[in-house]
Image (tube, rainbow, N blue to C red; front, side, top):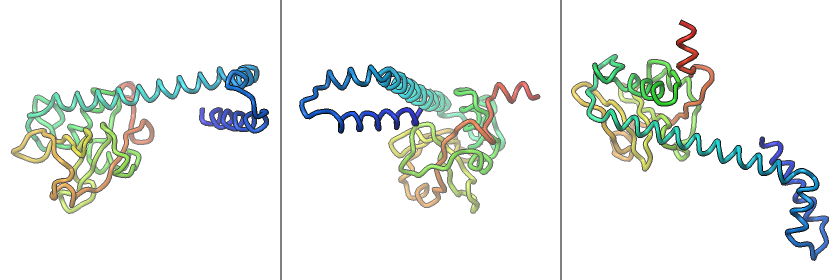
Length: 195
């Protein structure tokens, strides 16, 4: 997709450079249409827009679904709303239920199986990791936007939204990750058929 976009830009730049000074936009549109580039550009732009809308929709669905679990109690090793969740069980359940992706069970495994991103690139639905047990990636939550994340914090507590800027979380921040299907992250449907 990006190859066609680069070719289109190069063709436009070449045509613009070669065009006489008085050429108007109608002439440029005709040139692009004659070369078949206009339809390719439209196809590419529609695909890019569709993909962006799908990604945004999934992120929104993840956050909305996660918010539905506010107040569910923490339970070490827990992986359901009926019994409670620990941090990684909560993240795993949300991704499986919402987008059909099966993440590894533990927070450190989830960090290893997902794509590293810079904190400035965080988008709703991304994972945020913290060092809460004197080891990297010992806690995980789902970024919801505006510097906040949702997680299942600790024994005696329940799923809640927290501000990453609070000193406790800021000092313990370990990294941000984006979930993409691939090595370590399977489609939940594919995982079921392998059993």
